[in-house]
Length: 344
Image 1 (cartoon, rainbow, N blue to C red):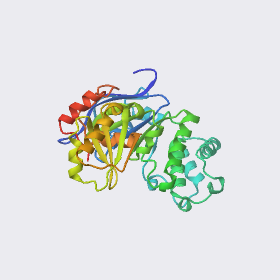
Image 2: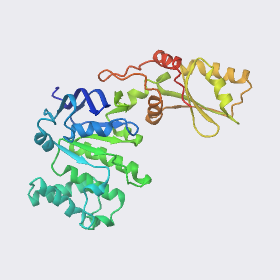
Image 3: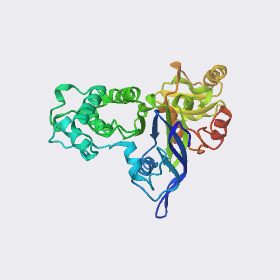
Image 4: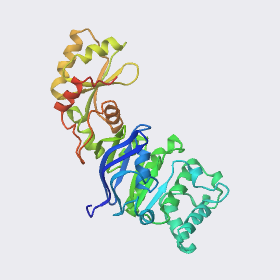
Protein backbone atom coordinates (compact mmCIF):
# COMPACT_ATOMS: atom_id res chain seq x y z
CA UNK A 1 0.00 0.00 0.00
CA UNK A 2 1.50 3.34 -1.09
CA UNK A 3 2.08 6.01 1.56
CA UNK A 4 -0.24 8.21 -0.49
CA UNK A 5 -3.06 5.66 -0.54
CA UNK A 6 -5.66 5.59 2.23
CA UNK A 7 -7.70 2.88 0.53
CA UNK A 8 -6.40 -0.03 -1.50
CA UNK A 9 -8.54 -2.82 -2.93
CA UNK A 10 -7.23 -5.80 -4.90
CA UNK A 11 -9.33 -8.50 -6.55
CA UNK A 12 -12.37 -7.90 -4.38
CA UNK A 13 -15.27 -10.28 -4.97
CA UNK A 14 -18.61 -10.42 -3.19
CA UNK A 15 -21.24 -13.12 -3.57
CA UNK A 16 -24.77 -13.16 -2.21
CA UNK A 17 -25.63 -16.85 -2.42
CA UNK A 18 -25.27 -17.62 -6.14
CA UNK A 19 -25.18 -13.99 -7.25
CA UNK A 20 -21.77 -12.51 -8.05
CA UNK A 21 -22.23 -8.86 -7.00
CA UNK A 22 -18.68 -7.45 -7.10
CA UNK A 23 -16.30 -8.93 -9.65
CA UNK A 24 -12.53 -8.57 -9.28
CA UNK A 25 -12.65 -4.96 -8.08
CA UNK A 26 -9.22 -3.29 -7.83
CA UNK A 27 -8.51 0.39 -7.15
CA UNK A 28 -6.80 2.77 -4.77
CA UNK A 29 -7.74 6.11 -3.25
CA UNK A 30 -5.13 8.73 -2.46
CA UNK A 31 -5.01 10.80 0.68
CA UNK A 32 -6.97 14.04 0.33
CA UNK A 33 -8.64 13.29 -2.98
CA UNK A 34 -12.32 13.27 -3.90
CA UNK A 35 -13.25 9.98 -5.51
CA UNK A 36 -16.62 9.61 -7.22
CA UNK A 37 -18.33 6.21 -7.47
CA UNK A 38 -20.90 6.28 -10.24
CA UNK A 39 -23.14 3.76 -11.93
CA UNK A 40 -26.77 2.85 -12.43
CA UNK A 41 -28.81 1.23 -9.66
CA UNK A 42 -27.58 -2.29 -9.03
CA UNK A 43 -24.08 -1.60 -10.36
CA UNK A 44 -22.49 -2.50 -7.02
CA UNK A 45 -21.68 0.92 -5.56
CA UNK A 46 -23.48 0.42 -2.25
CA UNK A 47 -22.07 -3.07 -1.80
CA UNK A 48 -18.54 -1.75 -2.32
CA UNK A 49 -19.07 0.99 0.27
CA UNK A 50 -20.51 -1.54 2.71
CA UNK A 51 -17.27 -3.51 2.48
CA UNK A 52 -15.13 -0.41 3.02
CA UNK A 53 -17.21 0.79 5.98
CA UNK A 54 -17.16 -2.52 7.90
CA UNK A 55 -20.80 -3.40 7.15
CA UNK A 56 -20.04 -6.45 5.02
CA UNK A 57 -17.56 -9.06 6.24
CA UNK A 58 -17.77 -11.96 3.78
CA UNK A 59 -15.97 -10.27 0.87
CA UNK A 60 -13.06 -12.08 -0.75
CA UNK A 61 -9.86 -10.29 -1.76
CA UNK A 62 -7.51 -7.73 -0.27
CA UNK A 63 -9.03 -4.61 1.31
CA UNK A 64 -7.16 -1.93 3.26
CA UNK A 65 -8.73 1.23 4.68
CA UNK A 66 -6.21 3.42 6.45
CA UNK A 67 -3.88 0.43 6.47
CA UNK A 68 -6.39 -1.87 8.19
CA UNK A 69 -8.64 -4.63 6.91
CA UNK A 70 -12.25 -3.60 7.70
CA UNK A 71 -13.22 -7.26 8.03
CA UNK A 72 -10.53 -8.05 10.60
CA UNK A 73 -10.05 -4.71 12.38
CA UNK A 74 -13.38 -2.89 12.15
CA UNK A 75 -12.83 -0.96 15.37
CA UNK A 76 -9.65 0.64 13.93
CA UNK A 77 -11.28 1.43 10.60
CA UNK A 78 -14.34 2.99 12.25
CA UNK A 79 -12.07 5.40 14.09
CA UNK A 80 -10.72 6.62 10.75
CA UNK A 81 -13.93 7.07 8.78
CA UNK A 82 -17.12 9.10 8.75
CA UNK A 83 -20.34 8.18 6.99
CA UNK A 84 -23.17 10.35 5.66
CA UNK A 85 -26.27 8.31 4.72
CA UNK A 86 -28.48 9.08 1.76
CA UNK A 87 -31.56 9.70 3.90
CA UNK A 88 -31.29 12.17 6.79
CA UNK A 89 -34.07 10.36 8.64
CA UNK A 90 -31.52 7.63 9.39
CA UNK A 91 -29.33 9.78 11.64
CA UNK A 92 -31.18 13.03 12.45
CA UNK A 93 -33.52 13.66 15.39
CA UNK A 94 -36.10 15.99 13.90
CA UNK A 95 -37.34 17.32 17.24
CA UNK A 96 -33.88 18.49 18.32
CA UNK A 97 -31.93 21.47 17.03
CA UNK A 98 -29.12 21.26 14.48
CA UNK A 99 -26.45 21.76 17.15
CA UNK A 100 -28.08 19.28 19.55
CA UNK A 101 -28.06 16.61 16.84
CA UNK A 102 -24.33 16.94 16.28
CA UNK A 103 -23.54 17.06 20.03
CA UNK A 104 -25.54 13.88 20.62
CA UNK A 105 -23.54 12.16 17.87
CA UNK A 106 -20.25 13.52 19.24
CA UNK A 107 -21.06 12.04 22.64
CA UNK A 108 -21.13 8.57 21.06
CA UNK A 109 -17.46 9.08 20.17
CA UNK A 110 -16.64 10.28 23.68
CA UNK A 111 -15.78 13.78 22.47
CA UNK A 112 -15.87 16.38 25.25
CA UNK A 113 -18.76 18.81 24.92
CA UNK A 114 -16.60 21.92 24.58
CA UNK A 115 -14.51 20.31 21.84
CA UNK A 116 -17.62 19.00 20.11
CA UNK A 117 -19.23 22.44 20.14
CA UNK A 118 -16.06 23.98 18.72
CA UNK A 119 -15.93 21.41 15.89
CA UNK A 120 -19.65 21.77 15.18
CA UNK A 121 -19.38 25.52 14.73
CA UNK A 122 -16.27 25.10 12.57
CA UNK A 123 -18.03 22.73 10.16
CA UNK A 124 -21.28 24.73 10.20
CA UNK A 125 -19.27 27.76 9.09
CA UNK A 126 -17.40 25.89 6.36
CA UNK A 127 -20.69 24.46 5.10
CA UNK A 128 -22.31 27.91 5.35
CA UNK A 129 -25.18 26.86 7.59
CA UNK A 130 -26.72 30.19 8.68
CA UNK A 131 -26.27 30.92 12.39
CA UNK A 132 -29.94 31.75 12.77
CA UNK A 133 -30.85 28.09 12.10
CA UNK A 134 -28.24 26.46 14.36
CA UNK A 135 -30.72 26.29 17.22
CA UNK A 136 -33.81 25.56 15.14
CA UNK A 137 -35.43 22.15 15.24
CA UNK A 138 -34.19 20.04 12.34
CA UNK A 139 -37.75 19.47 11.12
CA UNK A 140 -37.92 23.19 10.29
CA UNK A 141 -34.76 23.19 8.17
CA UNK A 142 -34.64 23.03 4.38
CA UNK A 143 -33.48 19.89 2.59
CA UNK A 144 -30.07 21.41 1.94
CA UNK A 145 -29.67 22.50 5.56
CA UNK A 146 -30.60 19.04 6.82
CA UNK A 147 -28.06 17.50 4.47
CA UNK A 148 -25.31 19.82 5.72
CA UNK A 149 -26.14 19.02 9.35
CA UNK A 150 -25.89 15.33 8.44
CA UNK A 151 -22.49 15.96 6.83
CA UNK A 152 -21.33 17.72 10.00
CA UNK A 153 -22.30 14.65 12.00
CA UNK A 154 -20.21 12.52 9.66
CA UNK A 155 -17.26 14.84 10.28
CA UNK A 156 -17.52 15.23 14.05
CA UNK A 157 -14.89 12.56 14.78
CA UNK A 158 -12.45 14.33 12.38
CA UNK A 159 -12.29 11.31 10.06
CA UNK A 160 -9.48 10.72 7.64
CA UNK A 161 -12.00 9.43 5.09
CA UNK A 162 -15.60 10.61 4.68
CA UNK A 163 -18.08 8.41 2.80
CA UNK A 164 -21.10 10.23 1.37
CA UNK A 165 -24.07 8.33 -0.06
CA UNK A 166 -25.98 10.43 -2.63
CA UNK A 167 -25.22 13.80 -0.98
CA UNK A 168 -27.52 15.75 -3.33
CA UNK A 169 -30.58 13.58 -2.62
CA UNK A 170 -33.36 15.60 -0.98
CA UNK A 171 -31.75 18.89 -2.02
CA UNK A 172 -33.74 21.28 -4.23
CA UNK A 173 -32.56 21.09 -7.83
CA UNK A 174 -31.63 24.78 -7.70
CA UNK A 175 -29.31 24.06 -4.75
CA UNK A 176 -27.54 20.94 -6.08
CA UNK A 177 -24.59 22.90 -7.40
CA UNK A 178 -24.27 24.67 -4.06
CA UNK A 179 -24.13 21.34 -2.26
CA UNK A 180 -21.46 20.03 -4.63
CA UNK A 181 -19.43 23.20 -4.11
CA UNK A 182 -19.74 22.88 -0.32
CA UNK A 183 -18.14 19.44 -0.56
CA UNK A 184 -15.25 20.81 -2.60
CA UNK A 185 -14.81 23.65 -0.13
CA UNK A 186 -14.82 21.18 2.76
CA UNK A 187 -12.22 19.03 1.04
CA UNK A 188 -10.01 22.04 0.32
CA UNK A 189 -10.17 23.48 3.84
CA UNK A 190 -9.87 20.26 5.83
CA UNK A 191 -7.98 17.90 3.50
CA UNK A 192 -10.54 15.19 4.23
CA UNK A 193 -10.53 12.34 1.72
CA UNK A 194 -14.02 11.89 0.27
CA UNK A 195 -15.70 8.90 -1.34
CA UNK A 196 -18.89 10.12 -2.99
CA UNK A 197 -21.46 7.57 -4.16
CA UNK A 198 -23.84 9.34 -6.49
CA UNK A 199 -26.16 9.31 -9.50
CA UNK A 200 -25.62 13.06 -9.85
CA UNK A 201 -23.17 13.27 -12.75
CA UNK A 202 -22.46 16.95 -12.10
CA UNK A 203 -20.54 15.77 -9.03
CA UNK A 204 -17.79 14.67 -11.41
CA UNK A 205 -16.85 18.35 -11.70
CA UNK A 206 -15.24 18.26 -8.24
CA UNK A 207 -13.81 14.73 -8.37
CA UNK A 208 -10.09 14.08 -8.69
CA UNK A 209 -10.94 10.67 -10.09
CA UNK A 210 -14.19 9.00 -11.03
CA UNK A 211 -15.03 5.31 -10.97
CA UNK A 212 -17.77 3.95 -13.24
CA UNK A 213 -19.28 0.61 -12.25
CA UNK A 214 -21.40 -1.63 -14.45
CA UNK A 215 -22.72 -5.00 -13.31
CA UNK A 216 -20.27 -5.27 -10.43
CA UNK A 217 -17.20 -4.31 -12.47
CA UNK A 218 -15.15 -1.13 -12.73
CA UNK A 219 -15.16 -0.22 -16.42
CA UNK A 220 -13.40 3.15 -16.02
CA UNK A 221 -11.34 4.88 -13.35
CA UNK A 222 -9.57 8.19 -14.00
CA UNK A 223 -9.93 11.97 -13.84
CA UNK A 224 -13.19 12.93 -15.60
CA UNK A 225 -11.38 15.11 -18.15
CA UNK A 226 -9.00 12.27 -19.03
CA UNK A 227 -11.95 9.95 -19.56
CA UNK A 228 -13.63 12.43 -21.89
CA UNK A 229 -10.40 12.74 -23.89
CA UNK A 230 -10.65 9.03 -24.71
CA UNK A 231 -13.70 9.68 -26.85
CA UNK A 232 -13.22 10.09 -30.61
CA UNK A 233 -11.51 13.40 -31.45
CA UNK A 234 -10.69 13.82 -27.75
CA UNK A 235 -14.35 14.38 -26.92
CA UNK A 236 -15.19 16.99 -29.56
CA UNK A 237 -18.79 16.88 -30.76
CA UNK A 238 -20.38 17.92 -34.03
CA UNK A 239 -23.93 19.03 -33.22
CA UNK A 240 -26.36 19.25 -36.11
CA UNK A 241 -29.96 20.43 -36.26
CA UNK A 242 -31.92 18.53 -38.89
CA UNK A 243 -35.53 19.52 -39.64
CA UNK A 244 -37.90 16.54 -39.48
CA UNK A 245 -35.20 14.31 -38.00
CA UNK A 246 -36.32 10.68 -37.87
CA UNK A 247 -34.93 7.16 -37.55
CA UNK A 248 -34.47 6.81 -41.30
CA UNK A 249 -32.26 9.90 -41.46
CA UNK A 250 -30.29 8.73 -38.42
CA UNK A 251 -29.66 5.34 -40.06
CA UNK A 252 -28.27 7.10 -43.11
CA UNK A 253 -25.95 9.19 -40.99
CA UNK A 254 -24.81 6.03 -39.23
CA UNK A 255 -23.53 4.79 -42.58
CA UNK A 256 -20.78 7.40 -42.55
CA UNK A 257 -17.64 5.42 -41.56
CA UNK A 258 -16.14 8.33 -39.60
CA UNK A 259 -19.18 8.57 -37.28
CA UNK A 260 -18.64 6.33 -34.27
CA UNK A 261 -21.57 7.31 -32.05
CA UNK A 262 -24.61 9.51 -32.16
CA UNK A 263 -26.73 10.85 -29.35
CA UNK A 264 -30.11 12.36 -30.04
CA UNK A 265 -30.77 15.54 -28.09
CA UNK A 266 -34.33 16.71 -28.47
CA UNK A 267 -36.60 16.55 -31.49
CA UNK A 268 -34.24 17.74 -34.22
CA UNK A 269 -30.74 17.78 -32.71
CA UNK A 270 -28.14 15.06 -33.17
CA UNK A 271 -24.69 15.00 -31.55
CA UNK A 272 -22.07 13.12 -33.52
CA UNK A 273 -18.80 11.65 -32.24
CA UNK A 274 -16.41 11.37 -35.17
CA UNK A 275 -12.90 10.30 -35.99
CA UNK A 276 -10.72 13.38 -36.73
CA UNK A 277 -13.61 15.80 -36.57
CA UNK A 278 -11.61 18.66 -38.11
CA UNK A 279 -10.82 16.63 -41.21
CA UNK A 280 -14.08 14.74 -41.63
CA UNK A 281 -16.75 17.37 -40.90
CA UNK A 282 -16.70 18.53 -44.53
CA UNK A 283 -17.01 14.92 -45.70
CA UNK A 284 -20.08 14.46 -43.49
CA UNK A 285 -21.72 17.65 -44.76
CA UNK A 286 -21.14 16.53 -48.36
CA UNK A 287 -22.72 13.17 -47.54
CA UNK A 288 -25.77 14.90 -46.06
CA UNK A 289 -26.14 17.15 -49.10
CA UNK A 290 -25.74 14.22 -51.52
CA UNK A 291 -28.50 12.39 -49.63
CA UNK A 292 -30.80 15.45 -49.59
CA UNK A 293 -30.63 15.78 -45.80
CA UNK A 294 -30.92 19.46 -44.97
CA UNK A 295 -29.05 21.00 -42.04
CA UNK A 296 -30.60 23.96 -40.27
CA UNK A 297 -27.67 24.52 -37.92
CA UNK A 298 -24.24 23.03 -37.24
CA UNK A 299 -22.00 23.76 -34.25
CA UNK A 300 -19.09 22.20 -32.38
CA UNK A 301 -18.83 21.48 -28.70
CA UNK A 302 -16.97 19.28 -26.24
CA UNK A 303 -18.53 16.36 -24.42
CA UNK A 304 -19.20 16.68 -20.73
CA UNK A 305 -18.89 13.84 -18.27
CA UNK A 306 -22.64 13.25 -18.57
CA UNK A 307 -22.23 12.30 -22.24
CA UNK A 308 -19.18 10.16 -21.55
CA UNK A 309 -21.05 8.31 -18.81
CA UNK A 310 -23.98 7.56 -21.08
CA UNK A 311 -21.75 6.30 -23.86
CA UNK A 312 -19.79 4.04 -21.55
CA UNK A 313 -22.81 2.70 -19.69
CA UNK A 314 -24.30 1.62 -23.01
CA UNK A 315 -20.96 0.30 -24.28
CA UNK A 316 -19.31 -1.49 -21.32
CA UNK A 317 -16.99 -3.46 -23.59
CA UNK A 318 -14.09 -3.95 -21.20
CA UNK A 319 -13.24 -3.59 -17.53
CA UNK A 320 -10.10 -1.62 -16.67
CA UNK A 321 -6.72 -2.82 -15.56
CA UNK A 322 -5.37 -0.70 -12.71
CA UNK A 323 -5.89 3.01 -13.28
CA UNK A 324 -5.76 2.97 -17.11
CA UNK A 325 -8.90 2.50 -19.16
CA UNK A 326 -8.57 0.10 -22.08
CA UNK A 327 -10.47 2.41 -24.38
CA UNK A 328 -7.77 4.92 -25.22
CA UNK A 329 -7.99 5.75 -28.89
CA UNK A 330 -10.25 6.25 -31.88
CA UNK A 331 -9.03 2.92 -33.20
CA UNK A 332 -10.41 1.10 -30.17
CA UNK A 333 -13.71 2.96 -30.51
CA UNK A 334 -13.76 1.68 -34.07
CA UNK A 335 -13.60 -1.84 -32.69
CA UNK A 336 -16.55 -1.03 -30.44
CA UNK A 337 -18.51 0.22 -33.40
CA UNK A 338 -17.91 -3.01 -35.27
CA UNK A 339 -19.57 -4.78 -32.35
CA UNK A 340 -22.68 -2.66 -32.69
CA UNK A 341 -21.84 0.13 -30.26
CA UNK A 342 -24.23 2.80 -31.50
CA UNK A 343 -26.03 5.19 -29.19
CA UNK A 344 -29.54 6.31 -30.00
